[in-house]
Image (cartoon, rainbow, N blue to C red; front, side, top):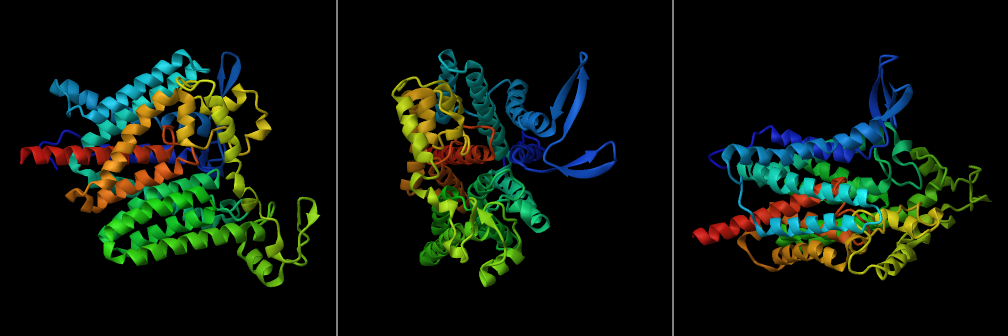
Length: 474
């Protein structure tokens, strides 16, 4: 910690609020105080009807209050360095090369508004990048300078305990709601992919704290994350988490590499067993319950009377149709979207269609909504998606610095590589960049994965800068 503290310790709570508000934006149910009946109720959303100019303006708790309030902590984090700069009449930290990379890409994103198919959306999305840059690379960076990088990681661990504590609580109190279809776990989120995304990106931090503190509570937290990851049946996040977290464990326990690899293989086997078994035990329309599992495995549900696709269910459960593996060859129809994306790329290879317009491209090209809305309107590929938005040059401005940082950290043999926290941060970056091959979230600043990802990138950059400063001073 620096001898002169510039940042108040209470900023820690702003970071926690930022993470929680962004993460809880995806909740399927919320606890709301109902004023008319003076009681707490669980609801998917709550709407206040406010009279305005002889009309009624509906204000949604989820779509308005939570949607906009998630940006408030980021504004506070970004405003804090500006306040310090005014007070000190100087920059609160030195300008680094990473700042130049980010500013150039942000300017490029704003320039894309000039030719965007949706200029207003491009401007707002570019503004979110600028806000995230100020919040993470200035606000959180200065907090790390004054209180240490481990203080930031410990803050994230607090959020992990809250998030997955709520997941397990939801699984116990509402198993049917936590496993809404095909035996897939989504907990309190709106879909299993989001729950799995939380698990994959936050697992390295849980492994880090468990390996450092060696308390049973932290290993229980790791177990809860693995439970969510395995039961979600989200293949891309499972693979990404396996690659990223295995890297951390191998670096942390180099003498136990075979134990680590065996553990990773066991998790993968359990995950893919549930992908095969879960949808067959709980076909669409079947409510999740432990009794149903026992009846199916022991009695094959001979007298259940269930139907699937208007046909009677096969008598033996393992002969049932499994929709989770039927589309494996197309990666859940991702390859169809990538084929269209490559076609769109040829239309504007250099400039793209405007930053933030990825989920508008199918509609812009008059694709039938039924062909893409089931799996979402994005390209489900962070690399192709960004090329389509800002072209080859803009994507290079974004990914070349990231790749340089990743390879530098992986290939150099610096003494700092032996620090478990740096290995955990690099594990998060690896996890997100692998998952980015199948999802579009690295540049979407309003989701939890991107916030944790950029905090990890910032702490790695900061560590590199500090190590170079120390070598120069020596």
